[in-house]
Amino acid sequence: MKHTLFILALALAIGISADPAIGQTQKSKADYLKEIAALSNTKQPEDSQKAYDLAKEFLTRFGNDAKDENVKKVRAWKDAYRMDRFFDATDARDYDKAFALGGEILAEKPESVDVMLNLAYSGYMSTGSGTPKHRDDAVKNARNALSMMGAGKLPGSFAPFSNQAEASAYMYFIDGSLSMEKEPKQAAENIFRSLQYESQLKNDPLPYYLIASYYEDLQASLSSALKAKAEKNTMSDAEFKAENDRVAKAIDLLMDSYARVIRRAEDQKHPNLAEWKARLEQIYEFKNKTKEGLPEFMRFANTRPLADPSKFQ
Image 1 (cartoon, rainbow, N blue to C red):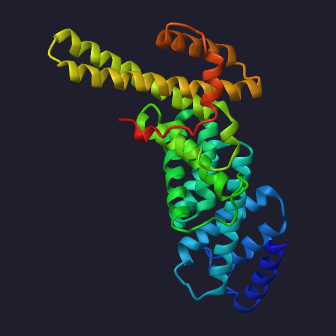
Image 2: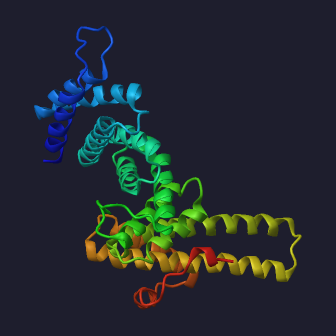
Image 3: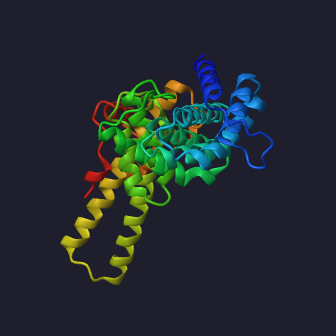
């Protein structure tokens, strides 16, 4: 209905200001307006796309005339059409098209949080489908969306999320999950932040598994470093104890994370449940020299607040 009203208003403006010069090699302003109105009025997708292409040409030639009402109307129609196509692309999981259109929109409207949220989510979904080429753009848009929302610049709609809390949770999670290889510590911290909001992520094993993976790598790195130093026999007893305590702390946090993973995986009947259980049993037995007390440990771990990875010393 909005497009129809625009077309009628544009047609009236053309009737008043039309240039009678027809047949010129280069289109006049009136020629563009007539074609755009006629094509967009058919409601046919191919005609709408042609109208959009003409609108871009029109604005390239005549868009600097900010006082011209026809310029304003063409720009508004072009922007609305492009935004519709952007959301169509995200819904259809046409990620290449979504990022192409989203990039155009953000180049003109760099504070469009609606677009940032959808590009971050689309980039995350595209990595799951085996095409990680949009990973860096997804992280960038997640961070920009969080920055904008933190400054009070909210989108017209939080879709595909239900509200600001859920959108914030997913932006932190998307940032963290897609940054784990490049920035593991910051990634773990961002995933932890994602769990501070009320969203379905709190009941999903994946965020906790990613944090467990961070501690897995951390304890392995600390253990290797400690072994190398010990073999050189240059550490004092106090230094050895301090380093060994850090390894033990990382292992404790690793077990704590796995306990949360397993509790949620059991609720979801997750296909990786058996594998995750076996890993926790292995770590727990290594640390405690027995499997006794493991069920109690798992229950107790899930009653405590999740440790903030940024606080690890």
